[in-house]
Length: 175
Image 1 (cartoon, rainbow, N blue to C red):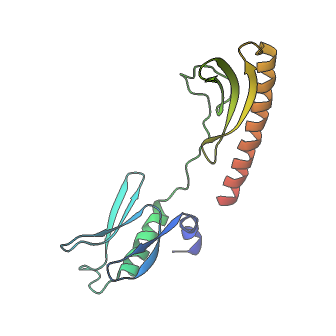
Image 2 (cartoon, rainbow, N blue to C red; image 1 turned 90 degrees about the vertical axis):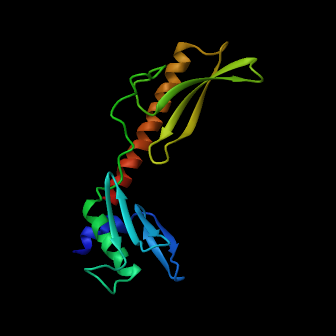
Image 3 (cartoon, one colour; image 1 turned 120 degrees about the vertical axis):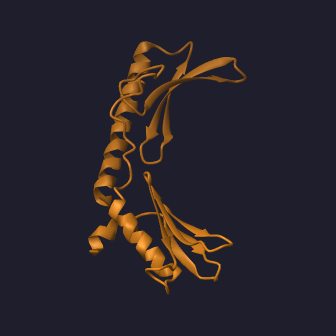
């Protein structure tokens, strides 16, 4: 298999797995180690509905090792791996309570100071981290105006556009 076909696998997160023999191997995401008390010893690939087991040894490979089975499992994963799914949604969720016109930007109202005051924010989510990354203060119930909310939404949408552009640029470099 050409090296370019294994390139996406190199970018997968890896973890250390210690075998019963004491050997430690770096294993890519989506590959699990199976060791039972009976005779099952090998690696299993789980990725988007694909599941395949690679035994350390067997009829086709009677003197196989965990390292060689991991190599076969990694090559199989490289064949079926299609990359990270995009975290960008093409449109807002249909049941969004306060539509803003942009996915990843939402208006929230919070009770603060033991419920004595309701505060309005516009929150922006980062597509890479899937967390809210920035919250823009709009005001309290007494100070919020439609113009002030519209201004903060405009700022939040511009900030979201910047985050999306950075995400897409990162995706282009990883592809």
